[in-house]
Structures are given as structure tokens and as C-alpha cells.
Length: 463
Image (tube, rainbow, N blue to C red; front, side):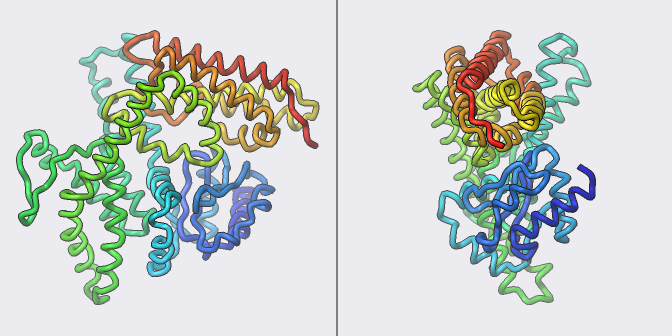
């Protein structure tokens, strides 16, 4: 699409979500525009889906999502320019109104998921980049192209590890934007959690206290839950001090007051609680995996397309980060994601072969490439598979079959990757070569079964 086309898309999107004044928060992930709207009734989902360049639109909790595909960054840039927002965060400046909106939904499950997704989505490119670098390190060392003493390998390891270790800082900024508070303060508290002095004290188990309050010693590198919880509470503390502070002293008084109040809250209560939450989630999933085994992988693989359709897959990022940090591998979500992309691609190939209409043939063929090679399944899901229904059921069945094999052979992912397509397969490269071989077999089983079911079962072709 040209800049003119993106400008037209931006005008139409803004017109059909109630204009820029109706946006309280906006961001984008790998394929979707994400909006929180003040008046949700102003979103015209049907008209938005007709816009050229839009693949689909839907509500996920209290967030309105518009599926664009891999060019979502260009679309978001055009919308931000048209609306006069910065690309980091399009939001209204009315703190009172935002506080009222948030207080109404702060205890709901949708609000929790929305907060997680909004805090994690902007940093996904960092996770993708760091994950692929770690995959590259695995491949270079396993193939014997670089030795453990190589300076190049040292730098690559440094880059890949930094993307995950400094997550509290990155997420501190994105969570602050999500909760409409100070991004620099959010980054500061993220940096405090991984400060070298604090890390050294934790490693040596040295007692710490703040104004007599004992500080819980915990490791926060590679974590996301603690900083999200800290910034959420900080948003209320900052608004309180902003409201009571004289205008002339605001720039000086507010940040100091927030830091002094939030430091004991962050280090003594909320931060450790966030670590416990992350550990329980990881332990719980590992427990279920050990108990359910191969069936758990099959169910996750089968459900993954539905998670993508609803946008819920983004909320799994904190779990993935926690798993990679604690046990160094992940047995459910990443293999489910990779199987899903190839299975959807296989369904699109079958549709292209069976379809009579030229438009459906060409669309399906291009979507197959996007899903399998690009690792982006939304265009195929929203544009082809979901509309034809039966191929979606074939994908769910094919995923289940591939998932059973992956579960039986205990296929693990050893790196966080953003692509569920062909470039995600190297994440399965681990200490044992059989892991990636079994992963490829699981993918092949899902491709073959989905392709044959779609081809034999058929579908009702709509004009």
C-alpha cells in the first residue's frame, strides 16, 4: 500500500471509531491495531471490515482490535499522524475521565487481560528480536560454526540475553503508557528491580530494609508481572499527588513523592507478590503438563487458532517469558503456535486447489505463504478460513493430531520467537537433535491431516 492508501485507511478507521476524541488509549502488536474507546457504541465494526487493507475487526474484552497484518506499523503511523498522537501512545489527557473509566473495570477479568495485553504488546518486537538472536546462537554453536570462546558469540549472547533480562525496564515504560502514568517513572522502577547493587544483595542473601521495613529479596530479571503490578498501583499514586500538588511545584513535588511512596510498596510488597504470581503460573502449567501430558499439548494446539481469533494469544507472553527464565524451555504454547500457522497454511492451499473463484484461489494461495513463511496467521484466519467455517474445523482437528505427536514425544521450544512459521522452527533446536526432528514430524502431521480434511470435506464457496 502507498502512503496515500494508508492515509485513506487512517481517515476511515478514525471515522468509524468515533474520531480521535473517542480514543482513550491505542497501541499495536505484530498484526493488530488496539484501541480502548470512551464510547464503545461508536465503533462501527461492520464498516471497518469493509475498509481496504483491513482483514477483520473484533472486540476482545474492552479493547477494540482491527486486524491489519504485517503492515500494521505503517497503518498505525498514519492513524497517529492523522489524529495528532505520538506513535508510542494515543490517549486523551483527561486524567479524571481515565481514572473513572479504569475504576469501573479494575476488578473484571477483561480489565486484567486488557492490562496485561496492553503492557506486553508494545515490547513484543524486543522479545522477537532477542528470541531469534538466541535461536541463532543455538544454531551456530550446535553446527560448530562458532566456538564457546568466540567473541562474536559473546556479543550475540549479550544481545539476546539483554532483550529478556531488562524486560522490567521495557515493560515499565509500556505499562506506564497503558495505565496513563509517567513512562520515565515506570522505567525507573523497572531499573530499580534489576539494579546491580540490589541484584548483588539478593545473590548474597544480605538483609535489606527501607525506613525499618524489611525488603523481600527476590530476583526480577526476565520478569514482567512484578513491574506491571507496580506501575498499575503507581498510576493511582501519581494521580493523587498530581491532584493535591500546587501547579508551580508539580514538576518537583510529584516525582519525588511518587518515588518515596512507591519504593517500599514496590520492594517490600508488590514486587515480591508479582514474583510469586509468576512462579505459581509457571509451576501450575508445568504441573498440568506433567499430569495431562500429550493431551495437554494437543488441546493447546487445537485451541490456539481460537486464541488468535480473539486476540487472547498476546496475554500468554508473560507466561512464556517466565517459563524461559525459570526452566529454560516451553512445552505448550510455542509448538502450538507453529503447528497452527502451518495447519492454517495447509488449509489455504487446499482451498486454493478446490475453489472455483479466481479471487478466492489467489487470496488463499497468498495467505498460505503469509501463514507458513511469514508466521502471521491472521490474514488467513480472518480473510479465508473463518469465513468458510469448515476449513476452520479442519485446522482444529489437524492441530489436535499434530499436538498429540508433539506431546507424546515431548517437543520443547528453547527460545521465544515471534514467528510461528518456518522461521520459528529453529526455536525447537535444543540439546537433543531428536527434539527438532519430532517437532517437524508433528508439523507435517498437522499439515497433511488439515490439507486432506479440507480437500475432502470441502466448503461452501460464497460469492
